[in-house]
Image (cartoon, rainbow, N blue to C red; front, side, top):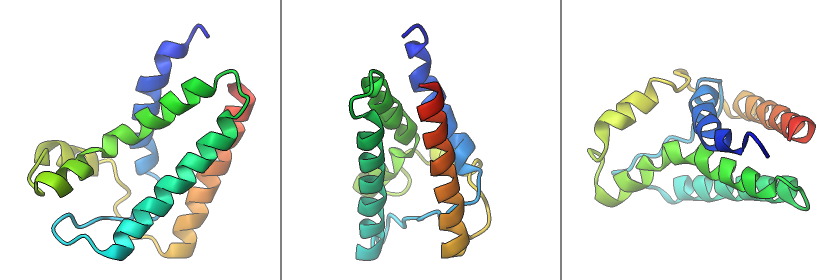
Length: 130
């Protein structure tokens, strides 16, 4: 795979690009983490793991897909540090990250519709080009 070195930077950069598209945000208040918010995070993460598992199964580029999936979620890792060490942890990075986010609240149905469309297009891209 001659372009394997591009997986990590492109996956991390795609996170910021995709954050700018309308979608259900799932904002988490680190000062007051609710059970429903934690359940949303677990469900979101579980769906992502299932999708990567299905797409990478018996695929010669499977390891690169897992590497890309990990690199794509790394830009959100600061949320875990904020939960553990307080909301001011990595505040400058958090503010920079939030500049990329779609600014309006999305209702559930349109928000999920844009996410499903994005997932469908990503699967189409992966199965066509990888």
